[in-house]
Image 1 (cartoon, helix red, strand yellow):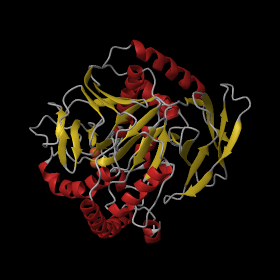
Image 2 (cartoon, rainbow, N blue to C red; image 1 turned 180 degrees about the vertical axis):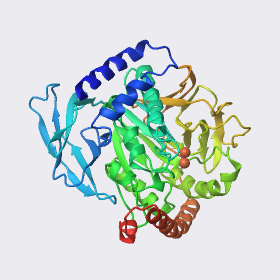
Image 3 (cartoon, rainbow, N blue to C red; image 1 turned 90 degrees about the vertical axis):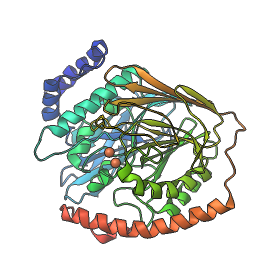
Length: 476
Ligand SMILES: [Fe+2]
Ligand SMILES: [Fe+2]
């Protein structure tokens, strides 16, 4: 039965190319059958980036009592000559298990086939490809798969919407090498939300990089759902994850937990990652909170503090591009340095050797804003008039240029491009000693805030029934 459902889905995915843009790619009834009958759906196998292109990380949930986990990897579709990669097992607060596996020794520009073993039970065979110095990514945010008590089908239907957006992005881009998601993948941080997020067959072929959103922090499951390379959990890191980095092509990706206000730890983490990767030509930072949109007045008190904390960290470390979320309002900032616009960014801009950082915010997949009146802050270069439309972005990374193309999901049309180019000897502005003192001070205040904020999160998780200890929260 599993095989026939997989065949039906494969045919449907192939047919998707012929479906008019805007129509559902996978029919709801087929999705419901797949969801009910596919044994991998509750496990939530997620393919993720490894430390660099020679690695891939995987993780999934396993039933209580499972004694082993591993991934078989082969260069052949029939899995002949497969190599076995054994995994690590962790017990979750719900009493069952999570599997963590890292695949190593991968060659560039190659295709691999893999299957995950939960004890003796084997998954379908999926495949992924590695890249060289150029690649294409989907940048999305606030996917918001939601498990709602009064709407038991909600998470399943929202997962279908995300799958259809992903499949359109795969079609438009001619093939994705990476998914970048800037947080709020789930609405309550629950396992059902995450396993639904990665249910589709198409997601198993693209490494999925996820930042921790404030909604992901409402549950404990993000910690077990993900297997993050180079993850650094400082003493005051969130329970759910720390900061982590990976390299792909000529890009160093720094994935930060902006729920954690410990600026001193974030700063040290980024500096170390840059020292370890001196040849990465581009530095891309991804985190959840929107800094410059200023579209929601009620959030401005929090946003002012976030800008104080993050802008010196981002400026000091010469970040080229920041990928954010949280506001659900798509925007492209001007080139910003020291909290001010240093170069205006207009529609379809090409920016050479930016003397600061460009910040992108995408819209939400399942919770786009209503068409209420709003305005953007002074550092925003390009925005949308109607935030109720579902949008996504395809980013082409090459050593010389980063090109972001924004798409309207309903029409399948592009509505903006942004191109950043960089010549070999281009440098960012020098970071002043006075600002370094300011960064140190806000980092210290952030540490105190993070201590109490983690305590608050601990009591919240305990109240929701997650069996975690204070030691789990404060253990680095
Ligand atoms: Fe959100
Ligand atoms: Fe959020």
